Image (tube, rainbow, N blue to C red; front, side, top):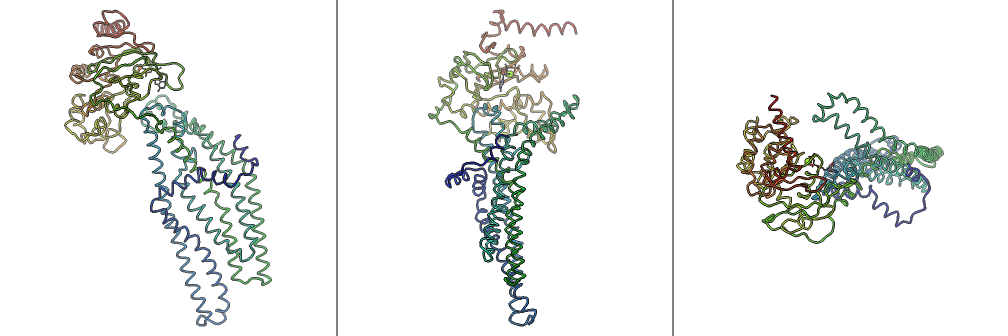
Length: 628
Ligand SMILES: Nc1ncnc2c1ncn2[C@@H]1O[C@H](COP(=O)(O)OP(=O)(O)OP(=O)(O)O)[C@@H](O)[C@H]1O
Ligand SMILES: [Mg+2]
């Protein structure tokens, strides 16, 4: 709002260098330059067609002028006369130009449209690369980054992309301007000041209007959080995943109402900016119409008095009206302003996710972790959170053994393993692997050594082959290894029984797709982690791997647990003590630190928190058994 008002106030005049700099770094100029690069070989071709297309209308006007001025003599002397021959030649030339005038813009439009698609595709890839570049995930939880990501997909309620902006920039702004100016230059032959006056008034008018579109685009960018909320409601209403709850709770109409409110909120600021620019736009059109009227009036007078001939009148009238096209680019200007506004968002996203400059990273020994992993006085607070989740935590995770992490909801178990997987770095303290601070080690190298199934593991709507193969892309084609992992997780038969076996998409969204139950999915997730182990990972993280398994499946799995995790450094998080008790060591987390540490028997003998939780859970089963 303040920005819009500021934009309408007269500003200090800028020096030419500043104007050039401002233009060079403007979203429109960035969008144009990126588009020209993305176009590849299409760019010079579009340039040639643009120049041809721009010059042809002027040539056509002159040809028509020659044709019209030759007509009286031809009418008088007939087509076989010299004048008649001249008319026929002029007609043929004019006809050829008309055909070219039809063809060239069509080819150019097709080429420029392809350039726009290529630009959008290149920018989409840059966005994805930028978002995926950091090894951690903290940036994805930053609302500012989320807003930037949303803007890169098209600006707010308008949805215009840089590709659509590029299309309008080349075809309309550059194409129409060039052709109007070249044709308009013919008006100089009449009165140079008339040409100058018309072009000057049109440019002033365009300047005002473009400024207002830029402010409107700015207003739309400012509404991104509202648009993101609207998108959230839209997904809620449309996604199969939320359909059950939305129906049973009867909140469908409420969601649609919220969507409408957010959408209208997103439009309101833009409409305000549009309203403020309206008086200036009207004043601009009045001036342009006045100047055009004056020129047309003068032409009519000069034609009536015979000061200019019919041919010249046709040429000047058409030249003046073709200049008028400069003032009719409103829709294009709006698309250009809104579409190109996504470009700075992409650049800002790249800036935010660029790797920080620092010393070269140490490579971990190929055998790491060969020694115990140590958490030394590790504290961690999530960005924007008031209290730390982990406080000065000290913990030694023995290599080649299994350790279970237990604790109440929110104790920080998942957070601890996310730190170990280097999805975040500690706020203070250090995690040491073979004596090397994880912060100094190559994160990608470390993450390759980790096989994990998280509590909220991803269910890819892709075949089981991919769902499990993603655990170790390098050997995803190894069918025997895939089958071994699936068999260990107890899901091999289920996969083989699917309509297209390993190639059945695990989503009803796709033709021929199948869906699995919660427990079956969990086995797929587990198989993925076990496949990562097949591919060479040496640290296994299992965060609630059995939460969805029935009692028999869990028992079966854990009978094989020791076998599966033999020689691996395994961190197991579970609320099921039947699972936990099998781990070599058990760590009880409370208040962000280690409260108890030991084997099942040691901790039971101690009679502390673990013994209390274990007894409580087994008591429930005993009670349930007694009352059955
Ligand atoms: N991405 C996040 N951003 C901010 N806070 C978070 C984030 N993830 C978790 N938290 C908070 O950190 C605390 C610890 O969460 P964590 O998921 O580590 O608990 P947990 O011990 O795994 O719990 P549960 O047994 O329920 O899985 C919780 O209070 C949670 O709200
Ligand atoms: Mg958890």
